[in-house]
Amino acid sequence: MTVDEMIAKKNEYGYSNKKLAEMSGVPLGTVQKIMSKSTKTPRYQSLVALEAVLKGNAPGFSDNAAAPQHSLRETSSYGYTEGTSAFRDDAWHASENSGKTLEDYLALPDDIRVEMIDGVFYYMSSPTSIHQLISGEIYVQLSNFVKKNGGDCMPFIAPTDVQLDRDDKTIVEPDVFVVCDRSQITRPRIVGAPDLVIEVLSPSNWYHDMIRKLRKYKKAGVREYWIIMPEHQEVMVYKFEESDVPKDYTFDDKVPVAIWQDACEIDFKAVYELISFLYKD
Image (tube, rainbow, N blue to C red; front, side, top):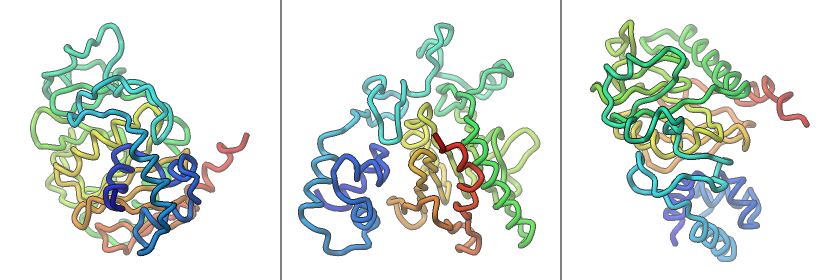
């Protein structure tokens, strides 16, 4: 297995560098260097250990993001996940969740939060306090940059509907996002792909954000996609215009925003300072 194949498997399974290090016994620093391809001559023993993990722990996802081969109940790359974020309530059977349109979405009761992807409803659980604090701090930093530097780009925070494919089959609510074409901004919703999308993971939305929405965002034309993993204090950054391979950061880093040519950096030390008390036993 080549390093590129390992990176692809790591992303497919959603393993963080920390998780790979724990499972393989390879030091975290070594894993980070291998997965970022910053080392040109990784040790053979390290590659063998990583390959063993990546070949032996496949969750068994189907290529069809909307219909996994089984309900996921293993320990995933991020944590524990149950199901696929599709409705599990008795009143919402899987067959009744497909074939939906914007009209069906708008007819839902106000107390039911869903996203609709390719005509399928997916349940959204209430965000945790860590989730909300992270999203809010990132939104503030993005907003401050825009206020200082001007321009047409506008940051948004959930819940804001995004009609991702400009059709009546897909409506998503990214945690934080930036739109630079103001013609996409209407009073009811955003129409078309944002330039930057940021999602904060929780155990209940792991598959949805890491697999299903990753594919949709890339296909729809999102330029940059961040996945924040609070439990591992890591950030995966996809710059789709450059590569399908993400770059990994930690909560010790300042993460540059590529859509602004790295002129803006999100200070994750400041993010962590805001939530650090929630990590204490």
